[in-house]
Image (cartoon, rainbow, N blue to C red):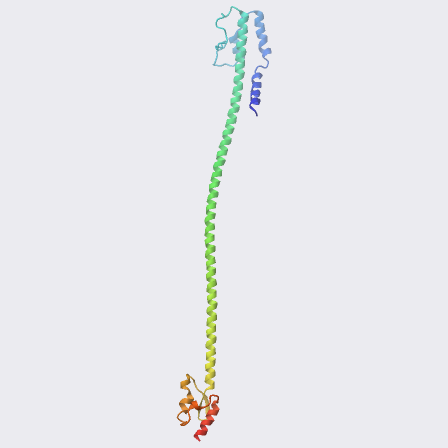
Length: 252
């Protein structure tokens, strides 16, 4: 609401205090003038106005009356002045009620404003508390995030280590399998070599162990028996049976 509208609203309240003024007061003033007698202002104020401490009944010492004029000299003038003084006091009383109403409204508005401000302050404090709680939650979440990231890095490192271990394990298994295969092949070759070299004894062919070429059983057992013929003079492509037959012929 605009200021002018507010002023007009309270002016209406002020003027409303004079409603019925003619009926209540002007008739009494007229009777006094017609009778040409002095108006009893103190008694009239006591009857129609509220008691106040600013001016006593019948008095309004603010320079309204002409102090140079002696009261009682002119009854009409004195009566008209009393009527004016009463009207002023009636207006003051109306203004007092208007101001009281204004002050009450202002106080109510102020109380409402204070309550609003108080509520806003309380709400602000509540927001601050929630903000601090939110900040604490954010800090905790940041810490949890950091811990989670560190765990992820640790798990990734563990996965890399496991992959390396698995890779090394496979490499070791392949190496072991290769060694086992080579060892098995060597055993098979050794076994084959043992089975191909035989000992001739009393007309029987028996298997002899072979360690090195220099320890060949044929050279050890038959070198002395073949005086003019050495074991190494036999052709390399001869079989054991052919060597055996050749030795038998030499003995004969």
